[in-house]
Amino acid sequence: MRTFHGVEELVGAVGTHLGYSDWHTITQSQIDTFAEATGDHQWIHVDPNKAANGPFGTTIAHGYLTLSLVPMLTWEIYTVEGISMGVNYGANRVRFPSPVPVGSKVRAGVELVSVVSGDSGHRVTTEVTIEREDGDKPVCVVEVLSVLAE
Image 1 (cartoon, rainbow, N blue to C red):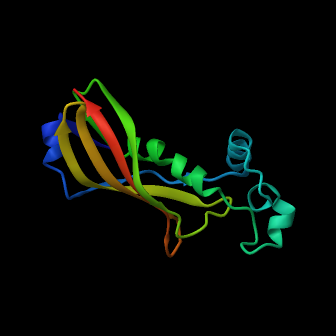
Image 2: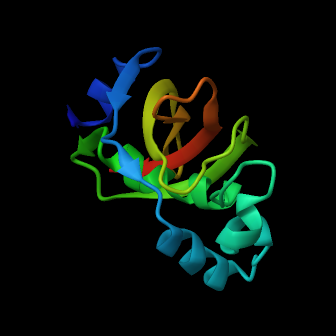
Image 3: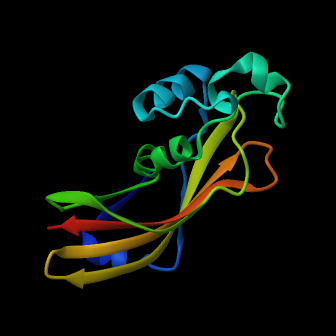
């Protein structure tokens, strides 16, 4: 965990890689719960028997499930002290270059792209890359926008 003591210290880290989260295992229970929450019950995610004969040989996590892990994973990487709150502002682009088979371990890496001050706070842009253990390509790459208020 990297701790920044205020936004000015964070600004000094622009252009650097902030580190990696711990590895987290994707379970079928997570996938099923996500399917319930979103209504996306496609067989490739929730039917292990049918998925065993599918293109990946097993069920895979929803791309948006992988994306939804970004807050949890990035909170393991860095924090900024001295702010009153941080909120999600959006994403500039999201890609899912590779699937996440059930049982995979994933982790995130974060690069700090920019910190821009404005009326509503400091807009922070990071590039988050989620990788799968022993995978040859990332499973999710997203440019994340957040706003930090002091």
